[in-house]
Image (cartoon, rainbow, N blue to C red; front, side, top):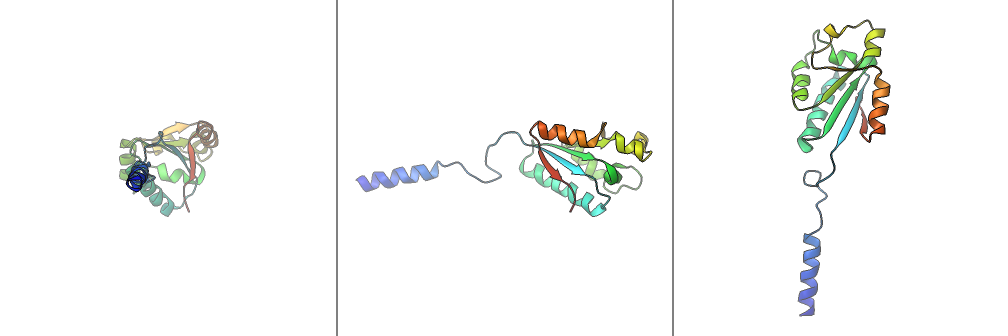
Length: 142
């Protein structure tokens, strides 16, 4: 009888352990800021896939992509083949924040940037602020 009780208790303990699977584990709200500063169009494509991958597992995650320096091409209208993906990600709640400091130094106007963009005065300050607020940081690219 003692063995049966022992095994029943052991089974109950094991069965009631929380799952550590990424898909089933209940966790706090996730917030990730991605830093994009590369002109590499392969990195742009990878980033859109990575954003979708995160949203597949964590559909309510807060995601922001901070774009500056040579990465500004990612958000330019002219010839941007990723416009549909960027717009679709915006519909899922992803924020694309473009650095006004970079725009000024490269003489780019808001008319040249995708309409879904939001703007920040200085990209590096935006990245620092997000991290101070507890957001996870990911450098986009390879």
